[in-house]
Length: 499
Image (cartoon, rainbow, N blue to C red):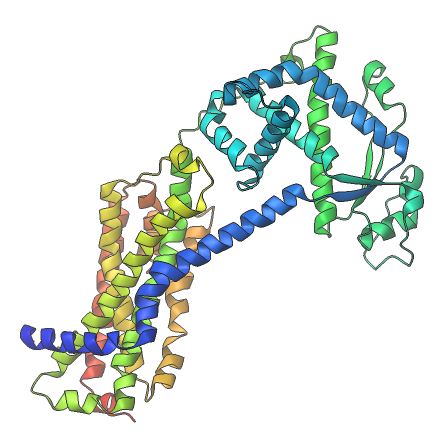
């Protein structure tokens, strides 16, 4: 092979490729701009949906006296924890600075619930304080914040209606069954029908002697909730109510223990002290390690896709391939030049994607204060080893896509041949998403699967050298076979002159 001829052909092919807007889009604009913008937009949409969910008002049917009982329980809880809540607020904000205490309480409670649910955009200011100072709070104080948020969320975002106000009439759908032995109006078919038709999200029954039973009877007080888990809003109401009852229940247990001079260990004899060595940053690295190989395979393929088609079937359509074949260069030099252009396009797309996604995660997606708290760091050795895998991956994809595209008589035909190949590369990369699949040595011998598993470990800073060398060797072997197959196709007149 003549290196000067290869360089000349490569320059010529690059000029041709860069004239194609589709190539520029898939090689540069899509990974650098389009995908990050899509991810930021999608994340903002998810945050908006989560924010709307946090603010959503749900409707429940209940008797007026029972509704007041639920409010009385919440007031009872609030009165018992006012001092503790003030201490928590001082820890997070250093005092109220003259702000309305009630407003601060509610803001902080919403922030706690938002932090648990991931709805970071709901109350950014309070959420920022929580992200920065959450670890300074004790476990009991964190639980107190979450409980108060759940109680407020349930009571403040509920529209109460009486059973006599229900207007829905008709018959229940198939698959709907009213459980037996339900108390009061909950056993009536019209209540279940109102839930089915989404006039209400649920219905509650609370015993009228609830407060007396809590103070005098150590046994459980039965509260009934009728809902439909197949309806999202109905299921959401149940989750809110469950959080509300859990918060109240913890307080009642504490009160009963205090009244009987018992310690918490009486009902919780084992104190498991979890010492998790994985930081939030490491958990994020594990997630990125699962996503990274999948996205790299996609963008290597997209980066190589249009250049390969344009340099093979595209030239056949333009009748410029014959002119190139008549020039005083060997077929191998022509194949090498076209391969280098396709390979560089694949690498460029993957590198631009990686850089843009890093900026997207650090600047665009995570909630306020989360970036500083996570302190995302990747070890240089892990990045170098990942890059060493990217090169043969891009070369393999470029060789295979170029060879298959060469078989097409026209650009459209080549596109039909090459498009299904993406599944050959993308599906094996999806194994990194499987939660229970461990990186065992036998997986190193499975092509492409080994790359996904290894990248997942490298992102976490785990260096499995035996696994790495087997994976790299298998990649180089596959790449060599791909290059040999492509060069063989370039030497066949029946393939080059196929029209």
